Length: 157
Image (tube, rainbow, N blue to C red; front, side, top):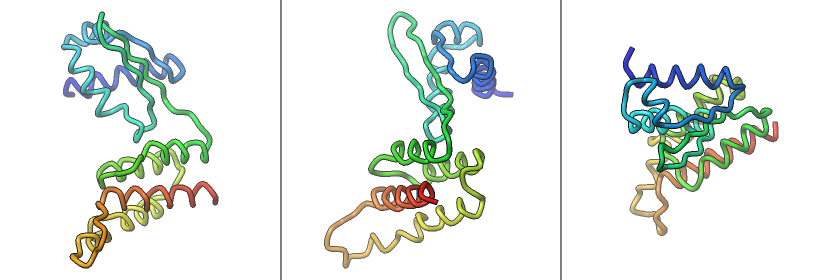
């Protein structure tokens, strides 16, 4: 198992032991894993993201600390968390990560995830690149609006 997976696994175990909220020093965790603090930062920024259901607070300097919270919400609260986390623009890989997490949490079905991804795929949005467009709208902005609309609809069901 590679180091980043070991770090992620340790953080996940610590989160489970601490009921979903972990506060730990970057240097302490790096020392425990035998790596540099930047490796810890990499794992946290790539694996403990809002798309995967985590909230991370971080303070730099003096070893700093990291507070990681696993989001625990009912279905509609979680959908609104996703809605707010999307922002004004979203890439297809980011939307795919959100859909995967929604599916894993059993908030949406596999079919719903596939429909959402089909609706916001690059193929579905290729008309935005048309020279007939009077106002240029980025694919990311359009994708975010479509994705957020679908999330709101799911929250209403």
